[in-house]
Length: 484
Image 1 (tube, rainbow, N blue to C red):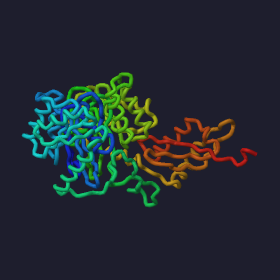
Image 2 (image 1 turned 30 degrees about the horizontal axis):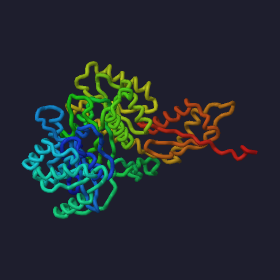
Image 3 (image 1 turned 180 degrees about the vertical axis):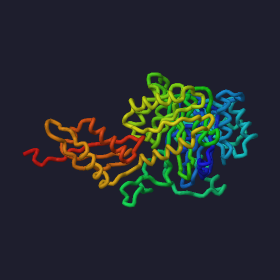
Image 4 (image 1 turned 120 degrees about the horizontal axis):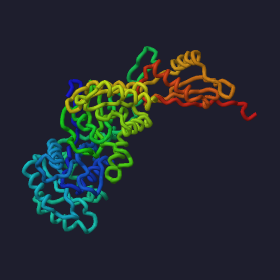
């Protein structure tokens, strides 16, 4: 880990870990306790692969809920064995472990194996929870659960909410016993983009300022094709093996966020599933993973498009980049595995040429090289992301913009349209994130695209607004004599 990067403080509240064999409803219960759909839920076993956390409140008491991968009896270097080890890591700081069994399927040997393993290898209390107990079909499995030796099971239906009152009551009782302090029921900031506080200024007149809150995290998402090294990059930034990695493509399925600090600034970093060409996505689970990645893209403020140095900025990378631009997010192009790349200069120049041809709407987009495996170029990447976020939130005063517009109109007046010259009267910035400007005047809606591009490029050059989309909208002045 770089000396500029620090992990954020551990989330406060009673830490509740949810474990069990695959497909017993762990993620459904996690979403129920979290109060929102964060984890992917599918009938296919083994959907969850990386553990994730969520802050929640129950009757004013703060809780941290931890979803884990399904426990498998695998002890080699297979994907299932690596998932099991990640689950063991997640149990390390838990105050209570909810061991989930499927009451409809009954108790199976794997339940018996892992219940014994939890009793022997876990310091936190283990509560037995019998899921899918709605109706009469789960009764037999509920009574069979007593044989596991974990005490009386708590009967629930995570999908329908049955029995959750008893589970909530038990959790609150434990929180009181452990002396957990109550907190305000504040809405989680994950996904929030509402940060309109003026934080910094570039000049004494306040003509240029940056709109963001120092307390809210900068939201960054790492996206790209499968097997580009996204999880490896996030692990390298964190300085720990937080996410599951390996040679298999498509290991990551959920988009999971982690909190850290870079030079004292809070960062929320999203690891996402790989995005393949849409025509190749046929399975329902992969469609859900892609939708989750795109959701993270919409929540992000800065997006790091990670590319493989063997084929950087291919057709799929360009498709993803255009999606980021259309969403109005700040974009960084990061070329991974640079340490094993031949013809470095030729490769980098080819990427720059393609960016200039294919993405003129984000001139100056940062193009960085790194090696996630060997932790090279991470500081440069994080600094570029923070700088780009600042550009993305820039706001210019109307007076400054109109002085700039007057000079530009004198140097290059608008062209004639239908034999008459377009009259541009004034300009103002309508919003930030990304910088969006409104142009007023007569016949401005008939301005040629070439002249609009001239104004956008001039804004970039004169105000140093590189690497972020700039939106220029026009509004025609009302003619009071138009109907007379």
